[in-house]
Amino acid sequence: MRFPSRRWLLVAAGAIVIILPSAFLLAGNRRTDDTVITVSVGRGEFTVTVTTAGELKARQAVKITTPQGAMQVQQWQMRIASLVDEGTVVDSGAVVAQIDRGNLESRLQEVRILLEQAEAKYEQAMLDSALTLSAAREDIRTKEFGLEEKKLAKEQAVYEAPTVQRQAEIEHEKAERSLAQAKVDYDTRTEQARAKMREVGADVARQRNLLESIERVLQEFTLRAPAGGMVIYATDQWSGKKRSAGSQVSVWDPVVAELPDLTKMESVTYINEIDVRKVALGQPVVITLDADPSKRLTGTVTTIANVGEQRPNTDAKVFEVTITVTESDTTLRPGMTTGNTIETLRVDSVLFVPLDAVGSDGDVPIAYKETNGGLVKQEIETGTMNDDAVIIERGLTEGDRVRLTPPVDHASLRLVRLAGAVQDSLPIGGDTALSIPLDSARTDSTERDTTGRTAQAPPPGR
Image (cartoon, rainbow, N blue to C red; front, side, top):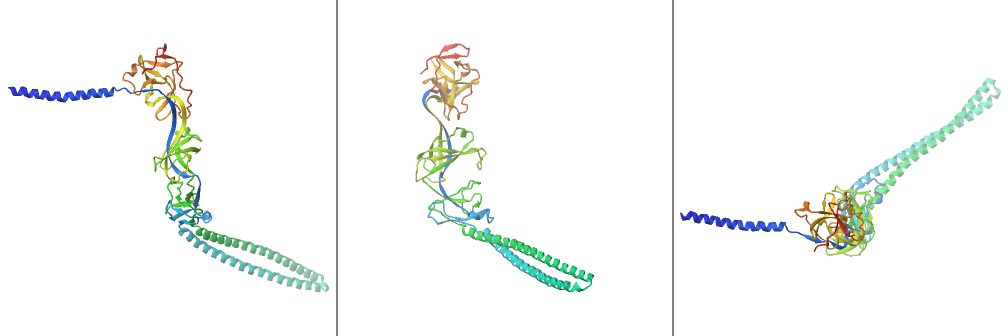
């Protein structure tokens, strides 16, 4: 009979061993959940920045392009057959790239055939004109002889009857008119022959000029460096990819490679339409390099696009922004990825709190402020904010303690209104790009609670 009693004692002891740690664990968790984090309202320098990635480019570069006469020979698209390795340092006149000649050489053969045909037409037109004009001249000569015969017959008819004389006169007049018409016809046929020769001659000249242009462009399909420097591949404007052997190049985007001036660099970046409103010309920029995170450079915003664009593989509209790098660094190379931190606003001395310390009671921005009389919901007036903090224009003073999270009983806390506050207060933040901070935080000596009574503001707690 004792065995069951000892058994139950062991079970009870085991239960106590399990329950007690769990109770302590729950108690510990409860204390963690009830942990209060407060911060002090600080005064100091406040900055607003826009951070974006960019790509280094040279501000000045010698461009290596496809032949300028390619459009004249109807070569709208060309393929890069070979290209030296990117980063190769070349001397002036060195071969940088070869353009595929296949299409243009086929075009060259076609034009040669067309030129031969045009020259044959020209020779045929010359022969036809010569035969036609020769026959016309012979006809004029024959009519001149006929007119002379009619003139003699007219002179001999003076002794004949009047009717015979009249007949002789009519025949003579006909011969004169026939000769005159033959001369007019000869002049007309001469002009026709000249017009025909000009037509076929123009076709010959056109085909010959085209042949010469194709031969000249073919010679320019070997792209040479116009100056010494480091070869950097150009970027296709349509696909955003760098040129390489096998890439297609059009006459509208003819740059194959560049020889940049590495002493003058800039970072080209694209900023979304929301943040671009904050950016202005002349703003300072801190530039970092993905290739060397320890290196920090400075720069200045120099250009901002007026029109947005949609970059490949993105849905948002962005604006191109150019940042000039102030320093000259021999390690900088075009195409390097940069991190650009643009300083859009700086205030030397202003009150601010973390964003987490600002909440709302309806439409009223508030902070949970600790006072000697306990915790209150203090109405505040906010200004510009950045990614971490927000400027406090009214409602708090330097050294006030505010909570980062609402208390459990926040709904029952007293709301202390600002003196002169209206019910439809502005929401937190607003347009941070255009906000201009007021003078250093103003402090009101009186505050108003939710009942409308004016009360003396208690001193800030520690």
